[in-house]
Image 1 (cartoon, helix red, strand yellow):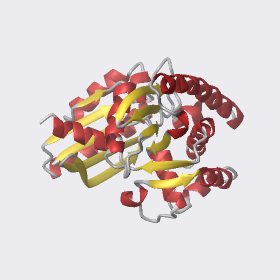
Image 2 (cartoon, one colour; image 1 turned 60 degrees about the vertical axis):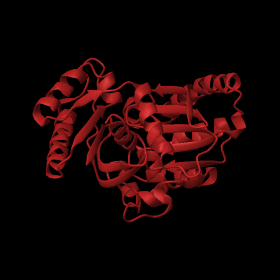
Image 3 (spheres, one colour; image 1 turned 90 degrees about the horizontal axis):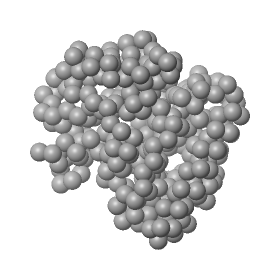
Image 4 (tube, one colour; image 1 turned 45 degrees about the horizontal axis):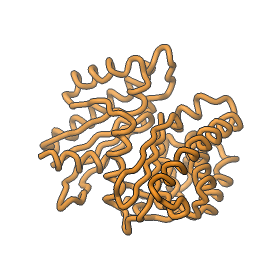
Length: 305
């Protein structure tokens, strides 16, 4: 039994599973919305309350691993740990109190690991794909051609940071639009230098915002990853959900079938990122992957044996 833990800026997630013939077989999945990046301050880093919530969840996950006789664990911290002045200190505390081998990975390694997980779930795999992983503290962008990574970028477009760092939706939207416009210039340059037709690049999304949209669109009362993988959302559907969710309160959003508790105030920022990318790239649809960094971590554990 293998275990992967992803300590994100909004959610702490655990996956127990096996890898068979290069394919991930998930056996147990747990998640806790800890909002580690909540209350983040540049001069102080992670807040005491956020670290307490997250440490408690790590301790829960350590017990689950022990109960299931896990052979190998890979636990990683991402944007919130990278950006916090006290991130390494918190890593040491988690390791000493849980005995979990937590370490912080770069945005580029995060993107590459996520890509391995996403590609293992896609059917069919597009010849050219732009994969976006929208997290709480950052968003990763990966351009792939024939399953080979051509270009990776990690940007400070995390939904928690966007919601807490901007006073108004207009300010947030302006920042997203500017950031994505700059990204698009670089992406087009990379496509040109690699003889990749920009118009042929399929858009693939993973992580909480994207999978929640797919669950909402299917009105899921019980989350089913098999129905999420390879689910296709046209641009019109994404716009529909933006219009439907915008006037609602966070609690009203969380009452809808498919919406995860704790995501009601974050979902719009994530949708704004998705729509921004779709419009810049003239993508008519978004393919959804439930698989991502967790599955990539399991694959890396298997390959290291």
